[in-house]
Every structure is written in C-alpha cells, then in structure tokens.
Image (cartoon, rainbow, N blue to C red; front, side, top):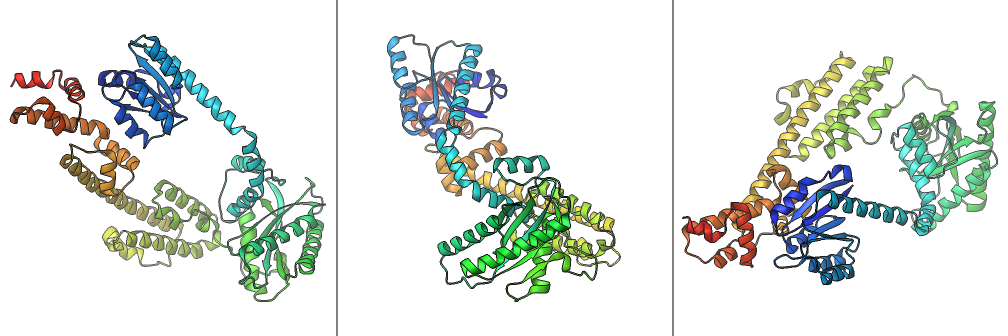
Length: 538
C-alpha cells in the first residue's frame, strides 16, 4: 500500500481531493493533507510518503521549492505539480526538478487518478526491479545456511507453522527435507570446557562438527542442523529415499553413522561429544516431543558421563506421561501477557485446553500445571502494573488460590477463561486511563503554546515519538493534530478580534503565523470572511 501527500494553500481544494478519489482501490492506504510547504516538510519528517501532489504558487514556500527540498532529503518520493499557470518556464523548471507529471487546474478527478495510477505502477516496477538485482540474490544465497539453522531452531523452540507456510519456508531456504515424512533427531552435547575459548574459535569448531556429521551422512540421508538454546548441536536426519522399506534397519544405519561422527570429531577436532538418538517421528508434527525426549536422556540417564551414545528406545518409562507441549510452545502465556496480545493469549488458552482434553488420565496432573502457569502469568502482569491480584479479582482470589483436587477439565477451563476476561477488562481500563491522562497533558501543552506549537515540541514534552503522538491524537480526538491546532488558532484569533484592538498582522503573529496573508486565507476558509470583515461586523 502507498501513501500520498496533497499540498495546497487552498484548503478546500486539498480537502476535496482527499475525499474525491477511490484511494483504497488505487492501492493507497493513507492520504495526508498540508496547507503550506512548511507544513508538508514537517509531515514528511514523520511519514513515509510515496507521492506528493502540490500546487506551484503558494504563499511562502512555492511548490517547486518544496519539491527541491524533497529531492534533497527523500529521493524516492515522486512529485506531481498542480497549477493554474500554463507557462513554459514552470514546466521547464518542473522537469528539471524531476517532477513525474504536470497538470493544469482545474484538474478532474479522473485525470488525477490516471496520473497517480501511472506513478504507482512505476513505483511498483522500480521496487520489483530493485528486488531482482543480482546483489540481493547473492546476499540471500550467502544467508541461506543461517536461515536454515534459524528455521530448525524455531521449530525446536515450539514455533508452530501452518503446513502450507512450512512447505513454503522449506522451499524458500532450499532445504532438502520434506514435510510429513519420518525423520530422526540427533542431539549432540560437546563435553569440552570452552569457557576460555574465544567466540570466533568456538564457532569454527562447531562449524567443523556440523560439517563432519553432514559429510558422514551425505550418501544416504539429508541432514539439517542448528545449535539450541542449551548449546547442544541438533541434527534432523531424513532418508533420501522417499519410501523407507525398513525403518528399524535405517535406525541402525543412523546409529552407526552417528557413532562414526562421534569418533571423527574426537580424532580430528580433539573434542569429546555425547549423542542421543531419538525415535522416528513425523516432521514437523513430532519434532518437539522427539527433541524433549532426547534432552531428558541427558538429565535422567547420561548425567555427567562423557562420550555416551544413547537411543531413546532404550529408555524405560515408569508411567505414560509426557511434557505438556502447548503450554511451553513459543509464544508462552507469560510472553503473550507481557506484550498484551490478548487475542493471541485467548487462542493460546484454547489450544492448551484442546490438548488437555485429549490427555486422558493425565488431565488432572496437567491441570495443576496449567493452573500454576496461569496464576504465575497473571501475578507477574499485575505486579508489573503495580497492582495486587486482589485489586483485580477481589473475592475471586480465594478460588484462585485454592487448588481443588476435584477439579476436572471443564471447571478449570471455566476459571481460566473467566480470569482472562477479568484481567483483560482491567488492562483495557488501565490503557484507557493512561491514554486519557496523556491526551489531557497534550491538550494543555498545545493550548499553552499555541503560538509556536509543533508536533515535535508536543512529542518532546511527553517524551514520545512524534508518529505515536500523531496517531494517538487522531484516535483519541477524532481529528488530525494539524486540524486541531488550526482550529485553536482560529478560535484564539476570534477572541483577539473581539476583545483586543490589534492590527490583523499582530493577531496573525499572536496565533503563530508569520505571514498575515496566509493567516487571512486560513481565516476566510474557516469562517467565510476575512478577519477585517469579521471585525467590521462586531
């Protein structure tokens, strides 16, 4: 989507053009308005404008001067001239300023739309050409190894892609593996003390380990790899043969190759490693459970033993229970509540209870786990806001703090979603109060500094970015910052005309306009008469 700025000191023309074209159908998301060259430059500091439509003859800065300034600072912004002066010297100078088109007033909406569509198509073509440049292709190619590692790391961190998106990503980063096929994970722990090794040397050692494993497996298997958040090296292994006739035999071959990799790493890199081999699982559906099962081997069985090799199939479970996957899948409840992503938080709750309902006999065990995770997330969020849990939940806190052994899935689900509704309502009210207080501060500052007020000055006063202040003002006040300032200035001008015996030029200066003629034009546009005519009617 593109953004357009219309500049003219005839306010009615700007307002008319801003609502007269089918902007959304043209691919335009925002249309900004400015009533002088100076105001246009201020707006351009905070907005990524693609096309500027400007009059040539304006009080103060002319349209051509504005375009010259734009070309100095925003070289990719296109310009269109609107003017009532059909003179060659203007056209010649406009061409020298690299103006895209030159339209004579009065211009029809159809002609302007045709011109803008042509420019938008040109910008799109330029963007496509830029993306297709060879240097970007080479940079992308150079980044592929790191992109592949990040892809696997995201999956191990619990990121859940829709299948179609996952297949697109596999194709994008040119991975040799296929979705919805069986694979095995190898989890490798490096057992050398590298605390005194510099980062560059450590990275070379790890890179060499990746290469050794990949080379050992390359004749029969595809391998992708990454380093996880615990500094383990993780390898996903998938057979090159689409149909695997004997999975058990393939698992034995993978074990032999993994042990060979372990030996070569010790031989060539002088490093000891332990390896855990997972069971077969479907990629990517089973990758998270495969990964956690492999990690648990290190804590439950291997411990501090070095140069170990272990298959997950060797592990004998005393009872049939597994980690509750969705609760810890990124983004977690804690992460979502931290940034107040309420819709995502609610969807996360729904997925958690979908998994819980399929847990069978383990539901009660997992229910306590979910309860504790939610209570922890709610407590953290409220304490961060400087509130006690009781301040939000009131007497319901007694129910929250009592883990009822008779809880089944439905009562827990009812409590979880009910608590979510309460805390979201508190958040909405809290945010509304903050925005309301902020708007009061902004309005007071504008009213007290109307003569020299700017968006940047307001942003500095409240210690926020100008773009945020502009968006907040439009959302809360229902009008643009510039329109609000204009209205206040005109209202102050009316009060001065009624109660002060001042010249029009003095009044213009008092309300923030250095050029009386520009003030007079704005006043007439607002009230239908000049300031002097208004004064004569008093």
